[in-house]
Image (tube, rainbow, N blue to C red; front, side, top):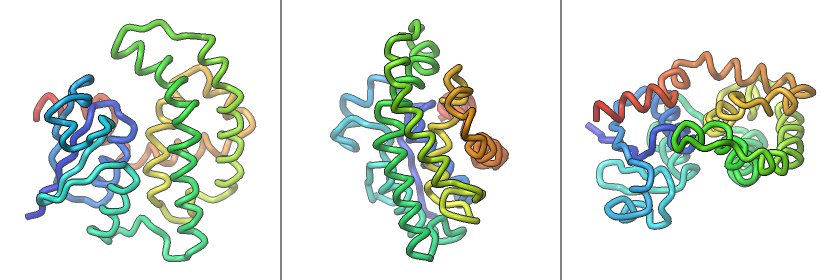
Length: 219
């Protein structure tokens, strides 16, 4: 039997993207929990030399970078398919995947989500209101563009769930827990509806921070 192993810190949105994909594929997998800080040292950096989360193994094949892992899973486990066959829809999926990494996370969620959710929960930090305020102009640009791309579709790549949705939902989940969510979505109600739709999926319910923390304790 194939052995899928994900090395991740509970609460990592990138690790969660892969966990959601594994749940959607309906396969058994092993969570190898990583403690915060341990991802910057051995033995973890032998799997991910840049010290980022997550890392992945499948029957001895080692891989890192979340998008690469997601695409590998969709190729290795083709049912249900999470990549559109239509080249334009597939390109839209790829575009949203990159927006997620380069614009939604970088400079938005790694500031707002960290200051409001991760820092206080993990390190007992008090949010830096100045840093959050400085991130908001970019956040509005990102949210407005994602809203435009989603339009009236149920998912980012059309009528069917794709890797773009799986990668995006953990980022939005963090931001939805912050006071900034309301102003960011005030003129983008389709994003609120999209997140609500995704949060009803069993794969998303099974991979919350608390649920993954429970799996980590049992590992």
